[in-house]
Length: 339
Ligand code: SF4
Image 1 (cartoon, rainbow, N blue to C red):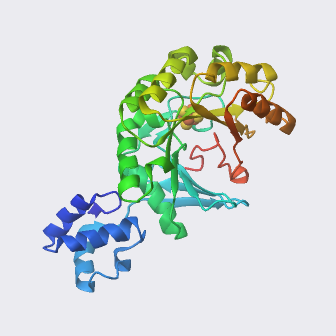
Image 2 (cartoon, helix red, strand yellow; image 1 turned 180 degrees about the vertical axis):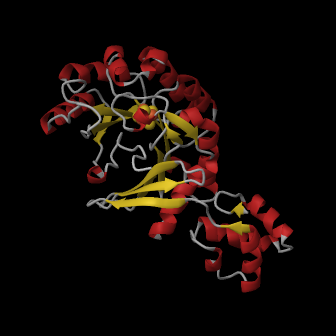
């Protein structure tokens, strides 16, 4: 049985060829899957009943299930999706009241090997990569469930996207071509896998690279992110400069603000110095306390002081709006825990 979600137009044409139907039928099916997000073949109403019956014998729309769905008081929706092998990942739909954007935060792996100390996913360890179809199914599932069109995709769910780069790149190509989501509305986030950042620098991509820095120096970063031991901030700095030089694109620096650890005035100054020759915007993310560790959220006063100091150094700085904290959908809180 073929799964239609994730197939290219050419792959759908192979199915319609086998059924002795025209290429136009393949185009219709493609539109129903990607633009109209149908749940069942029977919803493809511009196909004859006879053809739909034939198609149902060899194909179905999807084989993943929504295992749990949670809706936050701010409208954020978190899904726990189950793949046929029983593995689960979480996917989040974020809406922002003042914007028309609907952003899907997708997972790229089941679990994660990077094991950042603040992250719930890392505690699970690495289970397996998702293939590109399993990645795009997350967005299709959101669209099917909500009847809404996702406008932005961020690879910030479970897993390290750059450790599953081929599947992530293929999924991005499909988001761009089949879902008609502009490349600039696609963001890949990384903990700082230097060889893969260098590889991305060689590709002519319009998407955004977000780098989870989270610290102003090697010592603090090592406490937060084991990856610093392998790919340290000094080498990362060279890779980021190289990326900007090669692509001309501005990087987004993600910085989780944790009380008394990396939120001090000294940290802000040190961070500003580290970033001074890198073309980037900075996204500050006040930490959401979890039961997993003792990290605390800084006071609003500390957050604003930190922001001011970075802005004073010439960077554009935003403080990320907290979405879905009441359903554990905020940054670092995904881990498929009921699976
Ligand atoms: S923050 Fe990202 S890279 Fe780090 S453990 Fe969690 S999922 Fe992996």
